[in-house]
Image (cartoon, rainbow, N blue to C red; front, top):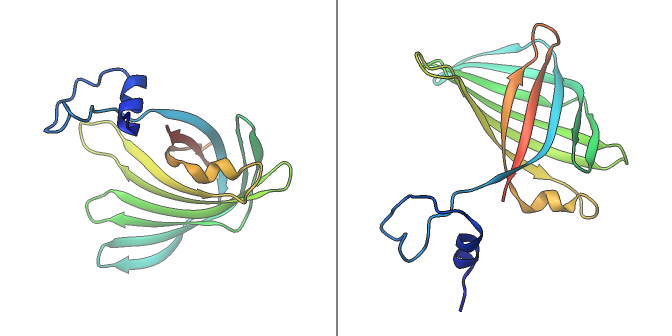
Length: 168
């Protein structure tokens, strides 16, 4: 009887990774597919004060747009990105906001980001996203795990670019 792991292994190239169970259950590395890119307009950060973990900030989300295959619309104003500038220099971001599709459907997003700039190493900015859509045309968004990237558009625009990928 074939298992889900067998089906996934048959569809994926060999990973070359050996684990204690990989002879029985092959290691299949995750793949991603592009879902959308959002350009999110932001206001100036508000300082919320120090905590035992570092300095806290809130960045209001003022609008924007998003687009991907079969998906397009605006970023609604009213969301916010709560940020923690950790004592070690890394940032934890927790943004909650809504997307409104061109056909009027509202999709909720929670984007949790780790951003760090280590010495002598590339910048690291990746996120995990929770996306909640109503049943119907965009209901498929409820059925995947999402990861993303984040880049600033400053100084040309007070905005960030968020690229979202589903893990398949």
